[in-house]
Image 1: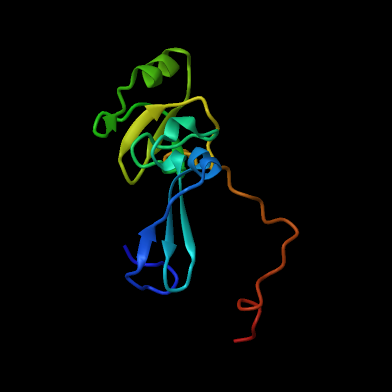
Image 2 (image 1 turned 60 degrees about the vertical axis):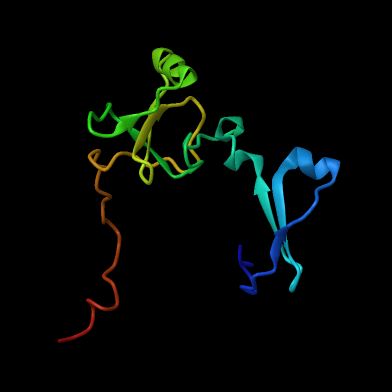
Length: 135
C-alpha cells in the first residue's frame, strides 16, 4: 500500500487499542509522515449503517428505481426480500449495477433519470451578463 499523503511505500497496518477495535476494522499508519488511514467496519458490513448502502461495495450514492429492471441483477438476501414484501423502495447502485430493497434513508436521494422534474419558472429573473452584451 502507498501513503495517500506522501506516496511512500512505508504505509503499514498498526495495532489498535480495544476502543479502536470496536470502532475501526483496521488502522494504517505511514512511517514517514505519520498520517493515519482509518478503515471503518461499515466498509465490511454495510448492513450495520444507518443510511442505505450497497450490499456489495458499500456505496451511498444510490438512486430509487420506479420498477425492477430485468437486465441488471437483483440482490437476493433474505433480509432484502423481506423488505420487498413489506413495501421498501427499490434502490439501485450504478457502479455495481445491483438492485436491492432497503427501508433506510438514502444519503443523497437521486430520482431515476426517466422521471422528469417540473421545469422551474423564470419569472422575475434578469438576463445573464453574457447575453446582455451589445452586439
